[in-house]
Amino acid sequence: MAEFRDIYWWSADGLRLHAHDYPGAADVPPVLCLPGLTRNARDFADVARTIAPGRRVIALDFRGRGESGYAKDPMTYVPLTYAQDVVALLAEQGIERFACIGTSLGGIVTMLLAGMVPGRITGALLNDVGPEIEAAGLSRIRGYVGKPSTWPTWMHAARGVQEGNAAAYPDWTIEKWLAMAKRLYRLNSAGRIVLDYDMKIAEPFRLPGGEAGPDMWRALAGLSGVPVLVVRGAASDILSADVAARMVAALADAALVTVPRVGHAPMLDEPAVQPALQHWLARSGNRVAD
Image 1 (tube, rainbow, N blue to C red):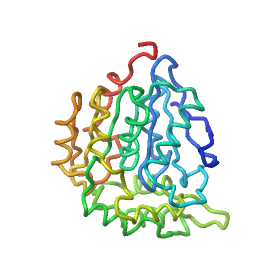
Image 2 (cartoon, one colour):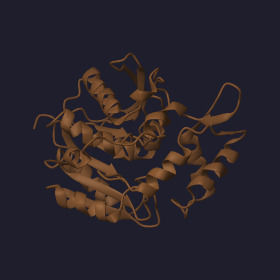
Image 3 (cartoon, helix red, strand yellow):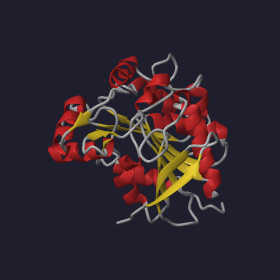
Image 4 (tube, helix red, strand yellow):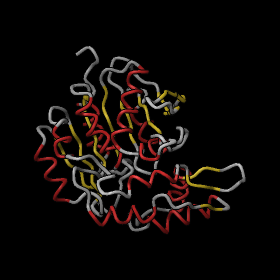
């Protein structure tokens, strides 16, 4: 089973940022895993271990999450800045070409990267996100993001996570809820279990347009020359079936997988995803020298 090493780099505005680096073959473009709004690198542990060591995998903590530094200016908690932080990582690591797996916010950042570093992305997996985001999902996220939540034990945290997400994962066992709690939360110095992100990430997100960029369909078009896999939860309130279908139609080389009985967002370990994921990995793994 592949294990990671911690890597760090600096943003343009002086933040120390962090990622989990799973070693893999040096002659194949690495896979960058970009998490959702309140999530972090731990979300991709299982996915990374299915990919490495065949390919290097770098799972990021965006600024304000996990072990990455918290921004002094909360208005830098926006997709464009996250994308600039990724570009700084690429430069620090000497990575020329790469594939992206982006969940929710991470998918928005992936689309922005396609325009910022044209020709360098070898493939993109967009997990339950697109150029248009459903109003119901945005309202739900705005209702909880940035609100502190603490628990005395991990089991309490797991039950709390279950209460807030049961509609998205109706078939999950308590073991899965406990695993999610340990991805979302951390133990603080006082012995309490707290959310593992800066509550101030909510400030720009609550502004009109703060969840994305100005023209995300144009950003999506930047991926038209590479293999794209769109993954959608059948019960998603973020990515509609109509928008997902339009995404696939707009791209030259795209496929859609809909995950039954899952909302926002699939974990990418579902049986419905696995064959398509492996096919996408093979097609997005052109040799670095190509």
